[in-house]
Structure formats: C-alpha cells, structure tokens
Amino acid sequence: MRALHLIVLLAACGDDAAPLFPESYASTYTEVRNCRSSSDHELNRVRVLADPAALAPYMARTQPFPVGSIVLKAEYDFGDTSCAGAPVAWTVMKKLATPEDLGWVWQKVDAKRGVESENDPQCIQCHSDCGVAPLGYDGTCTVP
Image (tube, rainbow, N blue to C red; front, side, top):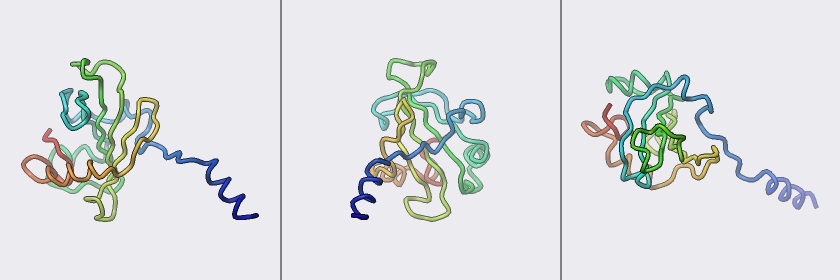
C-alpha cells in the first residue's frame, strides 16, 4: 500500500522542472549576438545573451566559463526580423562542473516558461560539431 501511495505522489508531482534562467533575465543578461535567423532553432530568429558570469568568457574566448554561468538564446517568430516581440521560446545552456555533455546542461523552454526538454541529443550533437574555434568556444556555437 505504501508503494502505491508513493507512486501516486510522484505522479502528482509531474515533471515540473524549472527553467535554468530567471524570469527577469532581460534586466541582468547582456546581448552578445544580435537578432538573426537560425536554421538550427526551427527557423526562429534568435538573440544570444549571457549572464554576468558568462559575459567575459563569451566575449574574450580565452578563459573557461565558470560553473553555473548561463548562455541563453531567446527565440522569436521567423517574421520578427528585429526580435522586438515577445520570445516564442528559449534555449539555455548552464555550465556544469562535470565533463558530461560537453560540460553543459541544455534546456528548451516554451513561451510560457515550461521546460519542454533537457539535454536533447540534437543540442549536444550540434554543439559538439561547432563548439571549437573558430566557429565556437567551450561548447558554444556562435562568434560574438
């Protein structure tokens, strides 16, 4: 009977993973790559932002990203050529202390801040292919 209660309790909790970035990211993150189209993100337009800890490593590309630092792609509708509207999704990378998955955890987050996926193999494969200089740095795929 206890096992049944535990199963019911776990099912009620659901998979309520929280996004890895704060809702107020726009006030503290810095744009490191401006609005442009992305064939890798469902043809959405994207802006790349870095949290304060990721900013210097992203821009200089000479020092490692500190554990916990975040690189965020805010995704916009294909027709929003200036990325002025509300994001339709986000893709976020958070630096880990371990080397698994290139040392990052990835999340795909929908417009309502619901986590759609975490560590999608497609993200890891793409970043494995482009995460070295000159195209990328330490698992990131874009040049500032």
